Length: 99
Image 1 (cartoon, one colour):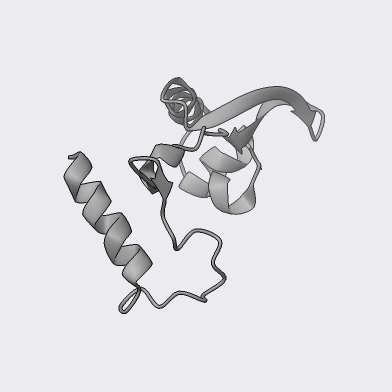
Image 2 (cartoon, rainbow, N blue to C red; image 1 turned 120 degrees about the horizontal axis):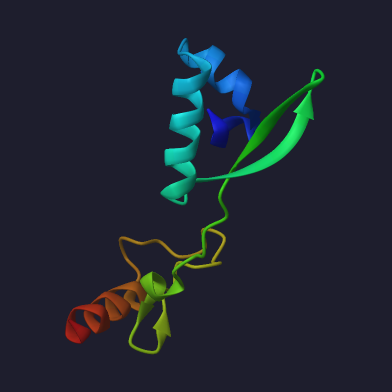
């Protein structure tokens, strides 16, 4: 829900989940502890609450690498056919060799 809406008040979360405010607070706290969301203190409809946002996660670009070569499918705008591409086959071969 939080990812889909990009932001959600904690009070809306527990109402949507049909749980008590205490349970909703615990859920939000656990999500924050796991690094899934950020909780920002705010006021909504005159009440103190938290605005819940998805946590920004660092991307792991190493997953696109085989040795020192980046996947030929990255940024190709569909110009490479993954079934017949010699470049992709060579990249996959390099990936297997590195493991």
